[in-house]
Length: 238
Image 1 (cartoon, rainbow, N blue to C red):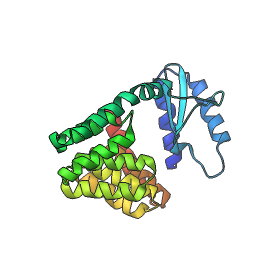
Image 2: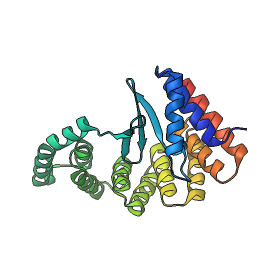
Image 3: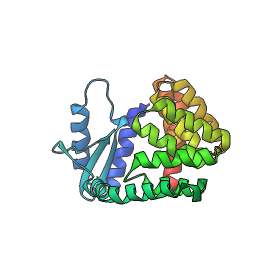
């Protein structure tokens, strides 16, 4: 039987070939990546995609070309964010000057528009929305995600749980809660969250994938394979 890592690598290879990357080149790239990995690391933890005729690896905040090990940067996004930041800050300051005229939804929409260029102001906007509407589930989710990205896992978990208290059927809040529990090293709790999520939304492919990974890690091979097969079925359908 294939291990979870084997299946992930086979799936990655298939996706690259479907993106018109030559099979021999795919094999060479995956072999090089596997050889370059430090002990204890797996290709299963990386995202390997085709961008045109180029293969790109994403691992955490890093992005590089695996064929020449050259680091890559999202210049377009970064430049756009830098250019937009002064405009975004002016908009945030104007909003604060007119805060008596803004309701929770106005602050929420302001947060959405500020996220890329001024995430610190976006966090403030979401907090202001929640001061006016403590049960605004989407504001809790978005604030949680920004805190999660910032590395404040405890605060992110608190926001995701608040979102679920306000909107128990929120698949996104549940999935994000599962992810932050994983990041906090609480895998058993994450499994419980993903399993409850799938009772709400059986077609959440990413929850099946994460469960397959967690079950494989804990030695529950049959449960891992069951969720992996469901993940593959759902992704092939879409």
